[in-house]
Amino acid sequence: MTAPSPAQAQATSTVTTGVMVILTAKAGVTRDQVMAVMPDEIRQTVQLYLNGKIREWYSRSDGRGVVFLFDAKDPSEAHAIMEGLPLSKLDLMDHEYIGVGPLLPLRLLVAKP
Image (cartoon, rainbow, N blue to C red; front, side):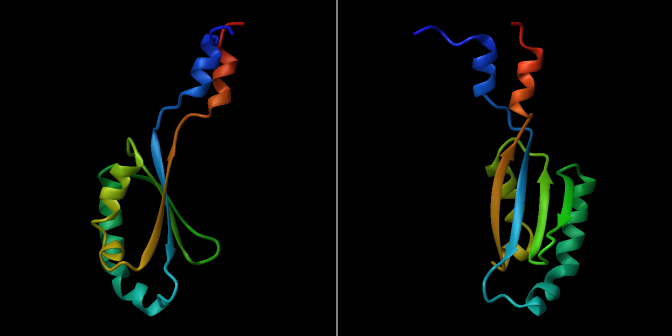
């Protein structure tokens, strides 16, 4: 066995530069329950955006929630932020946290042969 090349070593390690958070309404939660909390939720998420914590935000095309891209170093940091928001405090949404970073195959373009 030979040692991995620098390109192979780089290709197997990743840097987390953000966290995607996918929010989905929990089963049984009504639109009215969510909408009752939305004014506070919106104010707080706008503040997170203005503070540089939320980089991007999107509505889900299925109408069941939203997707945030957080400027966070790992999923636990994004989780801590989300737990402070009204929908999370009332346990109305399920959350999925996915760390994201640079596209690893691009490192092969800059590796020496």
